[in-house]
Length: 236
Ligand SMILES: *[C@@H]1O[C@H](CO)[C@@H](O)[C@H](O)[C@H]1NC(C)=O
Ligand SMILES: *[C@@H]1O[C@H](CO)[C@@H](O)[C@H](O)[C@H]1NC(C)=O
Ligand SMILES: *[C@@H]1O[C@H](CO)[C@@H](O)[C@H](O)[C@H]1NC(C)=O
Image 1 (cartoon, rainbow, N blue to C red):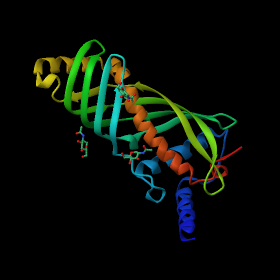
Image 2: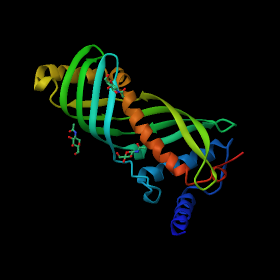
Image 3: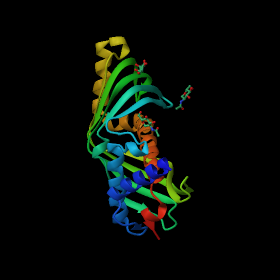
């Protein structure tokens, strides 16, 4: 009984802070405000719902298995997701598909790396500490929306099958310590190349990183959605 009350109370309080009235599915600007508010709350963490703060976000492992390049990032910390804003939101009439753009002003990622292969055209090899700063990112996000029945017997929305398309809008800097076992000349060639060809390099390496981030954020988003009934979020 106590835990039931607690859950009800928590859902109600999470709900109260982000929803003034359910949005009509055709009312994109209402949905956009709703999703931006939810995203902000999620990023700050909602301990009552088991949602941990996601700025900074710790990501244990990111693995990039690309045809010409293999990399692993360990114990990475991403800072800046707080600044990302949702726009151009579209939900179809059946409420089965969600699309929006995410604009992120400045994101930084640091941790440990292992890399080997080719960075576009240059050989790259190394292991050590890394840091990367992206000044401006645009991400097109598309996903399915599923209606599921929660433990409370109510219908809830769930975000599934996320597809993202990331478009770097401005310079991305990289610092890989200890490339080529510390051989300075080879290392500075790679850094110079990555600096001068930031867009091409980003297009090569970015997807596994963004998917790791997005899987995590979506996990939190879905925990949140389980706490609010479908009809409190969207009306037809
Ligand atoms: C990457 O490739 C390695 C070795 O082929 C495999 O063990 C690993 O599961 C792959 N990781 C991903 C994320 O696909
Ligand atoms: C990541 O952090 C864990 C826990 O602190 C540590 O055991 C592990 O060695 C770290 N991984 C790397 C590659 O440094
Ligand atoms: C998100 O990341 C946090 C911190 O690394 C982790 O505790 C949590 O389980 C992750 N959530 C998902 C859904 O992967």
